[in-house]
Image (cartoon, rainbow, N blue to C red):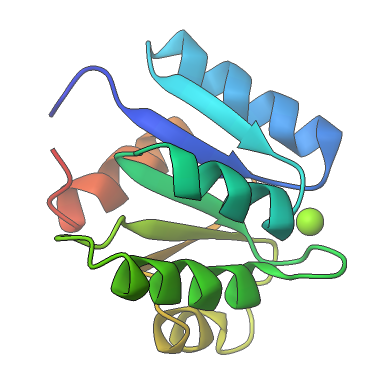
Length: 128
Ligand SMILES: [Mg+2]
C-alpha cells in the first residue's frame, strides 16, 4: 500500500476531526480538513485527493448530500475517475451502508476511527 495518501477529511465535530487527523498524520498521510459539506465541495473543486473520509451527520449539508454533489461535479468536469469516498458514521444498527452506497459512497466505516479498520477498507477498495 502507498505510504502517503492525500486525504480530505470532512467532519464537523472538532474533537473527532482532531483524533482522525492525528491518527492519519501519525501514519505519514497528508490531511486537509473541512468542517462542513460546503467547505468540502469548495476544496474538492481545487485539489485532488486519493480518497475522502466523510462524516454522515453534519448540520446544513450532510455527508450523503455532499457526496451526491461531489459526484455531480466529477461528471460536470468530466473527471476520469471518481475519488473514493468512505463514510464515517456512528450508527451501526440501521441500513446506513446501503444508504451510503446509494448516494455514491464507496464504503462505510463506523466510529470510533481506527487506523487498521481504514487499512482494511483501502485494501478492499483496492486504493493503493
Ligand atoms: Mg458530525
